[in-house]
Structures are given as C-alpha cells and as structure tokens.
Image (cartoon, rainbow, N blue to C red; front, side):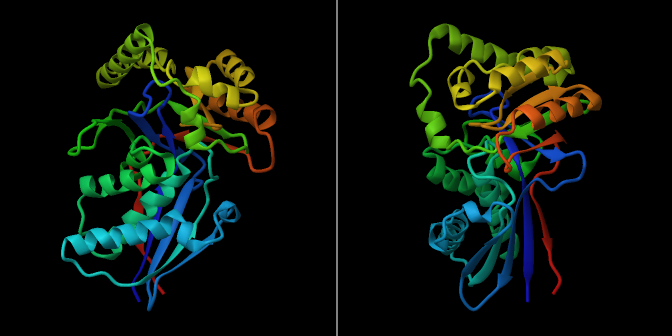
Length: 318
C-alpha cells in the first residue's frame, strides 16, 4: 500500500513591510517541527481523520475541512487533464492553531496538495500547484493571496510577482538573523483582520510602502542588512490591527529595548515576531513574550530561522 507524508511549515505573512507581497517560512532552531502534516494512503473510498494538538478546533464535519476540499479540487484538476484519480485515506496532523497568523490554513492546504501531487506521481508543476494552493487559500480568507502558501511550499522568503509564472521570486536570506515568534493563544480570523483595514491609503502611506519595499529587496541582494532591518515597519496594517492584540505595544517596547532589529505582526496576528542578530537576544525576547504576551494555555513561542526548504514529502513504510 502506497503511503505519503507531507510536512508544510508555519510562515510569516507580510513580514511587516510587505503587505500581501512578502512571506517567509519558519523553522525553530531547537528542531521542533512547526507546521501541519498530511498522511495519504490508498483506500477503497475517501476519508479524512484529524489528529494533533489543535484538531479539536476544526469543524466536526469532515466535508467542511479544507483538506477534503483540497482532495476534491485536486481530483477536478486531474480530470481536466485527462488523468485518472483514485480514493485515498487522508490524515491531517493539525499542529498549528487556527487564526494564529502563522499560516495555519495555508499549511494544511500546502501539505494536502503537495502530498496529493506526490501520491499521484507529480502531474502538476510547481507554478501550477502554487496557483491551486492560492485558489484554496482564497476560499478561506476571501481573496487569493500567496504570502503564506508560497513560502510554506517553497521555503525561504518569497516576493509575490502578481503574475502566474513565476508566481514568486526568492529573496536572499540573512544567515545571522533570528525570528522570535510568539502566539498569544487567542484567535484572529483573517477575514476580520482584513475588514478592519481601510479600503484606501493616502499618497504618503503608499509612497512609504513602495520605498520601504524597494529598499528592503535591494538591501537583501546587496548584503546591506542594517538598511534592510531599518525599513521593516508596517505602515499599512499594523496601525489598525494592533488594537486586536492585547499587550502588543508593551511587547514592542521591550523587544526594541532588548535590541530587536524589527518587531511586527505575523500575518493577521495575533502572533508577533521580533528579528534579532544574535541568539541570546532572541531567547531573552522569547522568555519575555512567554510571560507577558501569552494569554492562555494554547500560546507558545519559538526562536526560528528562515529555512531554505519548504514543504517536505516522504514515502512511509507499512
């Protein structure tokens, strides 16, 4: 019996300065596998089971689960290509909290579609599969965007092109930067976090956004890491979304005093992230956030790097 497992890492959407156009994968330095996994096996009929720390937060009806929708959507695309499909039994290991700002839905989608693609001998290329992932993510968030699914699938830090091929471009990574992430334990829906934003921005804000993004991309390519860090400020979403995050301003103040190069909201929140240029500072920030930013027993923090690899698939033995 053929069995495939796909692991898709957590991710930071926006990375503060790149609203909807920047994203970065996450890998804790202690080796924790921070992300969702999907197992796929041959079966007589389709089924989905859910396990893991946050499985109890999912809809009880398997038909409503995004992984089920991924399977049916994948099969539809296979049929359009004149390719055969077969029933599978899928198991979602739901390790990421829902509405956390860590790309939870993206991780489930990417693991499901990457796993199905591997199970059926890779009928779709990377760009096609990314397009499918964006389509499914859009069904949850209300609009198609790739700032979580792209880095989750491809790894690294990705810049969205706004095109269909290539969907993204990879940006150079800063090897000595650490990303301390902290999930407070509360939930913020992506749709609600988008609704709180203004429908238009003024000219000055638009110019600042464009200038910061241009400087950031250029600085990464030329190794001007200090310049890159200086422009990691969110002028689009953070001024509005931080009202949804208890303790945000105090956390920012501490992290800045601790020497953080940047501090911001991961995706829609409530997860926050701080960028440090040394491990000691990153760990001190994690300790503070554990004590002062986490709101309940579901919260956690990790010191992470951005991995060059994203989703990993492997064949399981019986």
